[in-house]
Image (cartoon, rainbow, N blue to C red; front, side, top):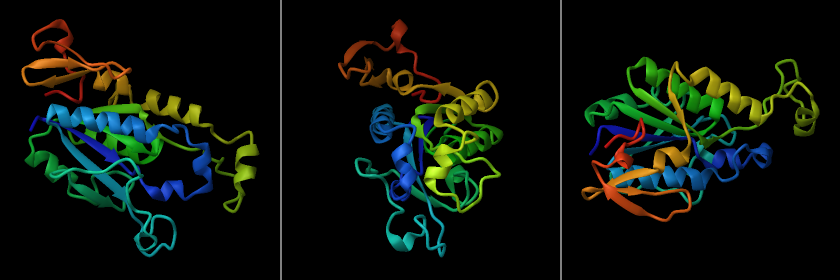
Amino acid sequence: MSSAALVVIDVQESFRQRPIWAYTSNPDLVGQVDRLVRAARRRGDLVVWVLHAEPGSGGVFDPVHGHVRLLDGLAPVDGEPTLVKTSHNAFTTTNLQQRLTSAGVGDVTVCGIRTEQCVETTARLGSDLGYRMTFVTDATATFPIPHRDLPADATLAEVLADPRTLSTDEIVARTEYALAGRFATVRTVDEVTAVVPVDGVTAVVPADGVTGTVPVDGAAGAVPVGLRG
């Protein structure tokens, strides 16, 4: 096991049950997260899955409805814990920190839903706890945010029509500005998955999925921050 971990946050069916899912910032979220997971496994990094639950709420995050589960296409393998949180960040209401400490993890990469909410909050708290955080923006997703003065019972159509609604592009940009240089290193899926050490060589895996190899001590052998072997 390496000293790095990938934490996948709230990539769950609950969000897909909401009408606003049609306006997600990242329709290919599952595919992007899967790329990160596969690369992390090849490195020998710890992969931790986190789900959000609101027991007794009656909503889509209430476990009684069966939506507190990973989206189709994603699944843990043996040895990968699945934690259930009730807070915005992945630390406060789980034993995530204990697990990371026990595994000797110092570098933590985060991805998931929502970009500016649970994923960003986890990155901020992880940084304050002393972890070297990597935030993979294109393996996160979010949705338009209504203005604070819009009535709570506003329809989705009203939210989308309101010029004050914050677009997903604006959300993503603001999140990156807030995190970069303060709480996390902001990287792309391509950057994080570009170099994967395997059996004494470094497998270079470009976006097209064609794999080549170079010696581990070659120039291409540098492992991106947050996923060091």
